[in-house]
Amino acid sequence: MIDRLHYISQQPEKGTHLTAIRTALEAGIKWVQLRVKNQPKAEILPYALDAVALCDDYGAKLIVNDHPEIALESGACGLHLGLEDMQIKTARKIVGENMIIGGTANTFEHVIQRVAEQADYIGLGPFRFTATKQKLSPILGLEGYTEIIKQIKHANIQIPVIAIGGIQLDDINAIIQTGLYGVAVSGAITHAIDPATMVLEMYAQINNAFLKEA
Image (cartoon, rainbow, N blue to C red; front, side, top):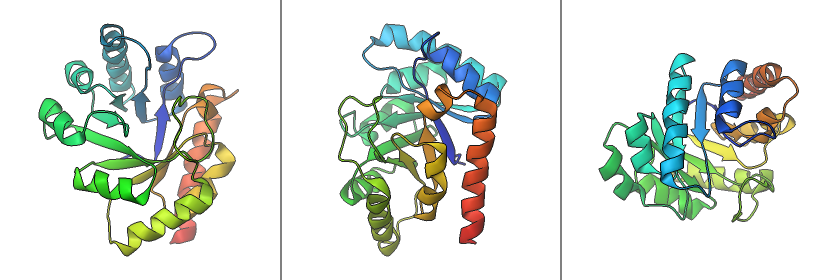
């Protein structure tokens, strides 16, 4: 089951990615993506091993960004690949059939590509500008999400689609109303004054939006 709220790690002002991940887990997050950029694999692997252990302690799933070998060696539950990363079919040969693999998309054509590659879920974005992404694809906003979801439904595509990119608490209800499955956040939790309350309110926003749809 793909969770409807994903936390993407980032290094806080004080501490490391692991500091941020521990805070998110203590706050109630159940789906964590370890996203460490511009560091060699030899330095990312220890992060992944420790992050898997942390997630296991909290009954959460860890997804490793970019690196299939690290996802496999660390015992992570999944792997997430960007549009410029290794192809999913190639990564699948490395990690095996049982590992969750998610893929980034920015257009409906990308969605079709990810479905053809047999991704388990899609990260669709960015919703708005985000400083965590160096090579930012065109911003989608609510209008972009609405149009792509309309095309997905018309094509009868069944895959969890997660909104990503600069998402804050107040955005969630409107995003879910477009028909998206869930949201991925980073700074909204990393920089929250009260992360536990923030996570509770995010899940409440998601659940309430689905109740409105029903």
